[in-house]
Image (tube, rainbow, N blue to C red; front, side, top):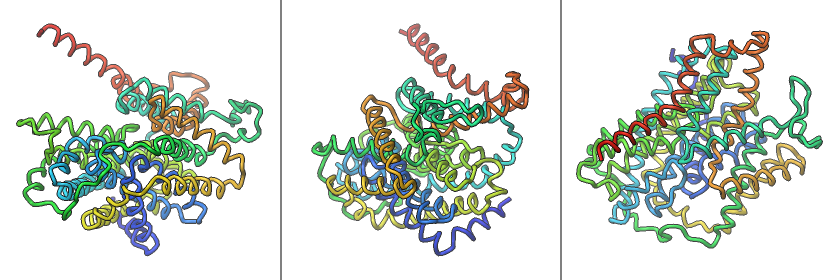
Length: 501
């Protein structure tokens, strides 16, 4: 059962992959520390460079996965020091992290958050090692109808659990699906949303899509806020970055609970670190906040979201590797990176590309240790990244984005398309839409249509094939329950409160 992991360590421990795991962890921490950049932008910018440099698939994925997990570590820095979340997963960290920094405990807060991140990620990587091969074996039983039902389940869980506004999340996912349909339909030859432009006949390239949607829109937002200072602009004194055994023992059950919770949430398709952080914080508050100290600088309020968001990041690899369904917006981008290498993630990946699946999981163990080693002694150095002026940052991101797209396509049309998508993404963000559902809809939309067609082709057009098997029927029931239960529970709670009052 663990042969793939032993072989994976053989892949991950080669000098090239070891160096790339270190580089990914380092860059990821820097990307995470810079507010607004985050893991998706970091991966979107470097993915085309990794491809054009000719890195093997397993090496590219090891570096990009290192950026993902590193960003979850780095996101806590600006949350604690400036009260500005580095990324969505670190939003809840501000609630108790920044009050601790204001009390003069910035160094210990960074130390405890690094330890919590390590514990949460370790729990999730162990879960990934144990459950991913088992789930992959189960997923072999999936046919096109079951995969279609799984996509429906992924969309329903995404619309309920991601973001504060489920309606905007659902609209974002639909926009992503519509963008995925652009181009000549491979089944019928019908042109869809091409506007008679030959450049759109092959659809919108994944790299152009993610760099435009995330990197370019981020540049536009940075330009808009170039002169604005959010939160506290001065870095508080760090002192020595350490954490005492007393604080670790106080938070030991918090870290274990939140790590486990974060892993489970990460496995659910379409959720992500922000949901994991919010759920773990509110759960821990209900369980532990007997003195009303949460929100005022409680160590457990800091440990809970940090353990959960890192566990969620590792957990989101489970559906991506075993089912080909991204567990988060960032794994949707990683899934696209695998497609660049003509590798289709899914149940057969562990047998057809064991070096990629095993190498990735093994590299997560290595990267997690590297991240702890980097983030404890060098936290002060990483914190200095927060002082980089935007007039340096914006041109650097723009150059990397333009070079990355041009290297892949050698065509100015791709650059123009990237800019158009970037403006579209900027407008969506200004209207309060999260971009993660859009990219998930873009990735899942194509797979959903493909599996629906195959299922209907097998049944001769009989739609009952979509819910005939026990697996697909269970997934349909779960999807409907996810949509209906929150509404139903809200109605019951409102009635209960009304009667009580």
